[in-house]
Length: 369
Figure 1 (cartoon, rainbow, N blue to C red):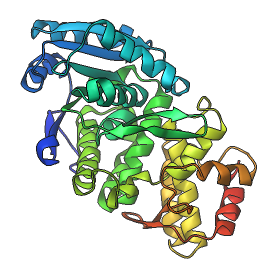
Figure 2: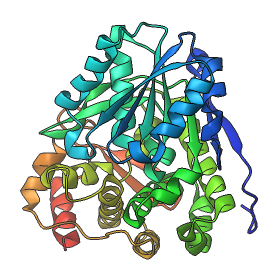
Figure 3: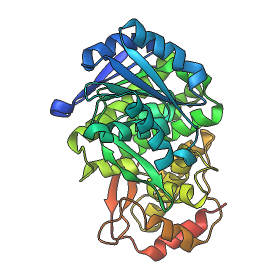
Figure 4: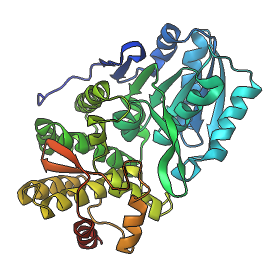
């Protein structure tokens, strides 16, 4: 990646045959939404699903772009926060669609962060057994991760994202101007997922983030577009190989087994998802060192970058067995064994189902604040 980058729009494709779709990345491109929607929806009605925080910021502009393109638009505004990613909130989306007699040719637009995107996609997968939807992610975490790949769902009290479906969007439109409204904490949480791509897949990308971290944190537009493009390109490459997570796609869960346990144990309301993933990556790296998989200097380098990015590197204090129990409810459990995504070195990870739980317990205890 060059040191000086222009803030030009970028496009890439998630290649899934008949379910392929484009990702558009740029500054000020929300105004293109109506024209892009006309290419992809055969119906003339769209429901824009958003939340109470995002609606005052972007709902009017989104609605205007769609109305100018000839659409009838309804808005469905959800409460904000991970604690509302449940059946009750999902039902409110169905209420809006059914009350307005949405048909199979009509569609949904997810306008917001990962919670909005996951629930809108799940509603689209279920309504009339499947209607199209389009992602307009407004947070860094949603842009680099949850809006791409077709994973949709809601949480259960016993675990995160345990109820859902694979349902690919027909377009992902990322306007980096929306990031200017993010609190710093939200921006840093998204950066955890960016760092994850470097650790699991691309050492050169990791080194780019190391070198340009201050520029990334300052919101340099050209650099941000390139960071989003590379993150999404990595995810698109992996998803194209393994759409339904039967193999290589599991690597994208680096940090998530431990991170989801943090979220579950703290009621989904103390830590942002990206913060939990950051903690989880540190634990995964230290577990990899403990079992002789990863060199200690590589772990120290990963942990140092996560810390420099202003992200947490220590777990909240809970009984070790509570963490083990929470991880036992993870989606990645297979044949009763927890599968761990562990780094061998920066840029290379693998999945291990043979890790001794005593090593896991010792690592958890050592990583608590």
